[in-house]
Image (cartoon, rainbow, N blue to C red; front, side, top):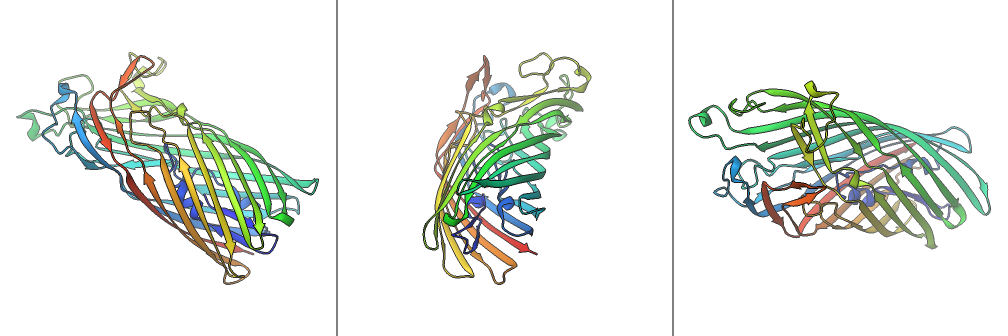
Length: 417
């Protein structure tokens, strides 16, 4: 995430290198939650930015292990899995009094887009998956003197929208039906929910010291709704040949993040953070026909039509870095991050190591630009059949992936007035 720091009170320092790193963290994490704008020293501050991420995850050794829906092993056993994506951000902060600050922001904290396509041996597992969120938040803080510095109490809330799409080859369609149907089924779903945050921060401006601990709650999508489209399959089984309205529920994870920064020498600053994200709340999301509403909808249940299977473990992200002020206009920073993969033998979210770098340019007292980049290593792994809570997952296809690269570019502008 972006970080904003004041070094011995001499300058405002904004670098987006850490934000670029976070944009390809584990699970469905893209930018997470960022309230650093709240700490800006300006009375009125507007900030806008975007990060463009270019992952290059390649799947290999794919094998169709379920002959019941057609044998796909004659197709290529490798595929390019990931798509490039952009992560926007916009925020506004106001200092209501000397002690009370508030901010409002829009972000896209979670998301995913994989697209290995139809022409590979694992198409019965996935053709394309896309998840996107929109987050609208308001956060305030109250600070007061405590010892040599100031203690800040933080609280706020947010409204979040989610949408998701997945397609896969449900069944190979034999002739003569293959002239009419392609056998692809798809799921389109959306929902929304509310969340809240609370935290503490302690600052000693004389030493450029700030440490914060912020908790962001779960967001319960209790109203997921959408459609399962099986119109590309001949109507030889229940639900085939038609589109069916479905419902379900899921949670976006809660998280706890600790950040610290401190001056270590004139015009030099060190920073770091540790974040835990409760991705294990996302296991298997069951979707059931709306005609069965009122009956429990769960994976493996009698009314389940389909499910989104993630089977995540909790995520951990650790970041450390150093920043330096070159002069009154230019500052720079370097960071190194490790993110624990959330997949446990099913899926492609593996550990990631990321090196980020950025510069901040301040042409006037009121305007500041940041430019940053990051290069990451997506570590190797494999996906296949596993059993969780007595239910078998991944019994349609297996595949592996090697060490792959991911890159990101980020730019932002801040205006104080």
